[in-house]
Image 1 (cartoon, rainbow, N blue to C red):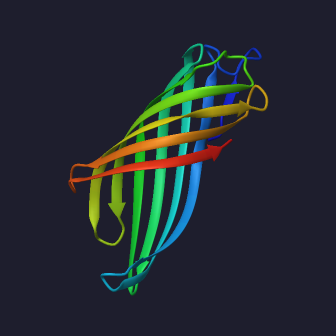
Image 2 (image 1 turned 90 degrees about the vertical axis):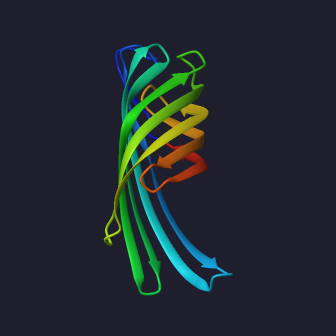
Amino acid sequence: MLVCVCGRSNSQLTKGYWLAGGTGQVSSQTTNLRNSGISGVKDFDIKLMPNVGYFFVDKLAGGARFSLDYEKQKRSAFTSRTTQLGVGPFLRYYFLNADNQVNVFADGTYQYSYFKANNGGGSANGNKFTFSAGPVFFFNTSVGLELAANYQLYNNPSTQSDANTFYISIGF
């Protein structure tokens, strides 16, 4: 996640400062379903998740997080493309002194998402709740390297499906 905080003093996490950042992910996967005879299912996925927030009090920021997810799945002669857009609020708290070069954060996000299949599969809406925590190493007053453990709950009422995902992220 890119962390960029601008303001009037040397502290990154002070009331009145802005927080801007985001994460990105690119993945490719080939799946073989041995018992079904299906092989060579290829998935390609790109995710972008920018956010902007404001420190309402020292060490506590809140704001909006956005997401864009594009996935292409190819199996034999069939190709599926899906796009998912999401938006929602987030809150982030830093536990240690605001002037520390290293800090620890916890972050919670809710996102309403819209899912569209480009192959005539229709569209659907969903809800994502993501909880993240980890250290951030500040290089200066504007940039930090962040490591996070993330847990995401996804619910799609229209398809009556749920997904629970655990993942690790790293970024600037």
